[in-house]
Amino acid sequence: MGAKRKKNRGSIRQRSRKTSGNRTRKAKKRKKLANRRAGRRTKKTYRQKVRESANGRTGFPTPTQYCLSTWDWAAAQSVPLRHKEIYSSHTLALTPPIGIDEQLHNVFRAEQFYSPPPYVAEIPNGRVWGEFGAVITPDNKLLWDVSIFPPMIPSEHHIFRQPILPPLQFTDETVAVLTFCASSMYYHWMFDVVSRLDLLNKCGMHIDRYIVNGVRPGTFQEETLERLGIPKEKRIHCSSTFHLQAKTLIVPAAPAIQWGPHNWQIQFLREEFLMRSKLEPIFQYERIYISRSLASNRRVKNEEQLYEILRPLGFAFVHLETFSVLQQAQIFSSAKIIVAPHGSGLTNLTFCQPGTKVIELFSSNYPVYVFWLICNHLKLDYYYLFGEGERAPDKVDPERGYDDMVIDIEKFAEILKIAGIRTSSGGIKKLSSV
Image (cartoon, rainbow, N blue to C red):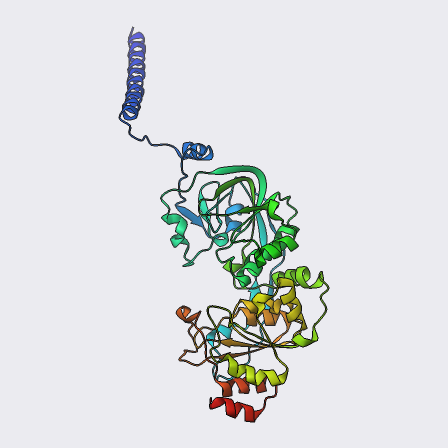
């Protein structure tokens, strides 16, 4: 009898719990119905938002987190993803540059250069957003190392300021990412975009199309892509409303996040634009001065004075923007002595022969190491000279990065002499008084 009472009590409790559960579910349904009738928005799950965005019905939730390294993100996934190192790491001993200052600027004090192993990673259902091609994982995280953007602080990437991303488009293809925030600049295009094709070519993964940004008809970007076998029909162009999810996204490492340029990049560019073209040297370009008089910044204000010194020494004055990429490669491959203000044109040092002498001119407070590093990779003789103005030996002022410069003629003659380029002292004295 006692056992039967206990059993009845248990069944009563169970019925009570079921009734309570049913009441709760019914209350939730009534609340949802009331919200819909009132025109209120009900909270949706992340998956619901993704489905609606993929159908082009709504915007897409903005990432709230970032991952510093694509390699680390791929390695941490529970389902193994393909990510492959293409080259081994290496270390290069650096030869100090030669200048006329008593103290070497801090930018040039490194004694060695370490190049980490570059890689390619495969991201199923990876996404690319925006005009500059930011890369987003399927779990909605920004991959910082392949999406860098000023002010170069991950948490301040402009994607985090977007209230919502554009509706998502989907492609059932394998798509590779070749985007960079400064792809409109020749140096960054060649080293931070074009050179990454070497990694894609060697990764062994089939690629249907390529995502690019900043490519306009008739530009050096289009010229290089056509030469490297990426015609218009294989390109997907970014825009401000761009938001694409690929069945498989292939992401090559972005060298810009590391100190560079790297030797593998230089060798790839030399092979594609110099060796395969079988360019012959041109005698008239053995001594060249690269003019920026057609540019909007970093111009040498007293360039005419430099011209009067260099012309009798057999220097040709060159405006690189009037030549194709292949022609620029041929000019630099022909050169034995190069004098130039700092600028993207010196990217073509990549095509120089060992032993070429390079004199780089800087504004007073903005030295940059990249072309000195290229000279170290290729065994070029590197010299530098600062323009007039105040400067500190241990600082770089980014606000002065695009300043025009005035070169002291006597100092210019001195650096030419140190480099073994003879000048006429009478000519220097006359020009100093102008």
